[in-house]
Amino acid sequence: MTETPREDRRQQPKPKKEQLLSPATAAKKLNLFLPATPAEFQATPITRTQLNALQENPPEWLVTLRREGPHPRDEVSRRLGVSNSALARAGVSDSMTTAEIRAIIDEMPEWLVDEREKHAPGTGRKPGTAVGERPAAE
Image (cartoon, helix red, strand yellow):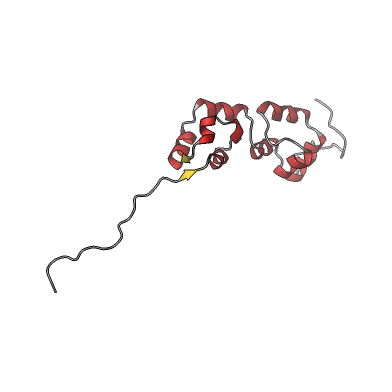
């Protein structure tokens, strides 16, 4: 055997690349309606680091969008307390603003009462109301 070290021919590890997310995926992870986001956000892929930075320290446009909307279907269904399928059955649009969601909750249409009862029993109708009967305004 020789005393000289052998040449290392193993492949050297490559530096890790930052994972890029499409604007649609980033919007979904941030729970945003993509068409309502700024054009700059829609046009460029976002890295995981940038996504984490947006979540930890959101810019003003993100704070406003989360507060006022328009919100994606998932967020609309969550705020109304129903499933996504319930929104489709009711013919509600894919996106709504916070004011539109509040108006629906204040109006409390029959479909919303029925769908809330299906989604989470006990939350749709006030106790003592018959099916098809609207509770008296208090």
